[in-house]
Image (tube, rainbow, N blue to C red; front, side, top):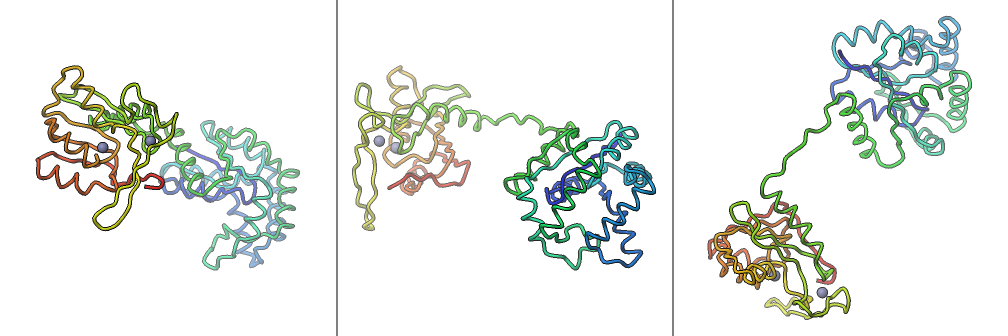
Length: 352
Ligand SMILES: [Zn+2]
Ligand SMILES: [Zn+2]
């Protein structure tokens, strides 16, 4: 059974954006109001709001307040034979009732934006000459207000909005409404993204991120997990030596380093790095880390790198790059330590 989704919302609420996402997902598209525009074209009338209103009223006089649903039924049935269908611009409560009776599984998506935002959007719309179907034509604020009143008072558009199965609040960005639309489609189709099991590297990096939260210096709360044969041997986080005050309590202990090229960098030296602390934790409990893998937040500094090499660790997996890891990369290469960075993103601190 194919899906039928009807979109309802006041003029300028963002229905087209939602409909376009459905079309991208393979839905067959039709507009409830296309009938009006077809008649306008047939009769060679100006597609302004006044003429549209006249035609809409004429249709309703002839076919009742549910006219647009009744007239669109054959089209909906035809499209549903071919696949999923989205109807843009459900207008009235009577239309809703007719459609719901005919298609009990119909899903209604309401798109909401506050009037102020909608009037702004509508008045900024530029008439597009290529827009044969007049999907996005310009409205003055007065035209938009008059249309709002008519839709609420004459068509009872509030009804289908109140009875909608899903509500999309279109007040932030276009990306956000697109994302939310796709979540709704996933939900309707029952195809919520399948659970993705983390790889072993992702698994230990995720654990490392939890370990890092115990860090005592906010210039980089890093963490480290040492693993062998898929078992955790030791963990460590950035922190002062046992029994000494923490940066979070007494402030950092900043030292400046002057580099060969004259550049000066600042480092907090109150703490031992997470890699060092993990190696020390292993040593304290007599655990050999030879041939193990180390998981860290970012590429180790050159001091830690030397200890990593000498402890016999053979593989280092980092979440991110580190701005001053040139020496580390070179040493690891020479010593045969495999270095893997999962996200090629640079870790940065303030005032580094
Ligand atoms: Zn510090
Ligand atoms: Zn370090």
